[in-house]
Image (cartoon, rainbow, N blue to C red; front, side, top):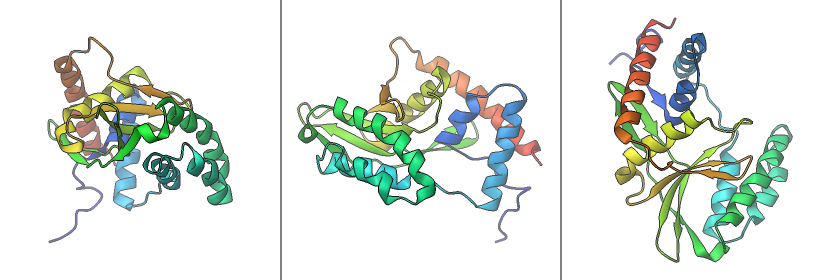
Length: 215
């Protein structure tokens, strides 16, 4: 079977890519989708946050309250140290907001594939947490950007995670953690899922149309 060329790649988005797309307006949407398409065609990509996520998960798993986070900025390559030092204080504050370290355990999450019309979107939380006191679980997605997540991006992220929670982490609630500011975003009260679904379906259809015409 012949591998698809850059001109025949079917539309596809990660949760991060799609939520960044819905946050854009006008011509910037087209240029953004074009960039995603080229990146996928080149198969190039690097996640600078990998070691940071491992350190945060280790602090949850081993109930160490931020010890691993405190060390990780010195452990990465010099080029990434300023980034990590900007992330550590907020992540540590969020970790402390969970209460006593022994009161929270790490929970295993699984990726899921959402279909928004004909657009596949990969739903990939960073990890899950479970509160020992009441067994309550949350699937955690981290936001690393310098600017806080917009209401639209946060709502899209939380809705898509909740939509597939049976596969991701059964009976859990979604949470989007703004790492730099240590703020946790949860689904706001009064949101009507059917309206969010209709909005995202329209965004997905436009994403597909842009992808098919991108050079």
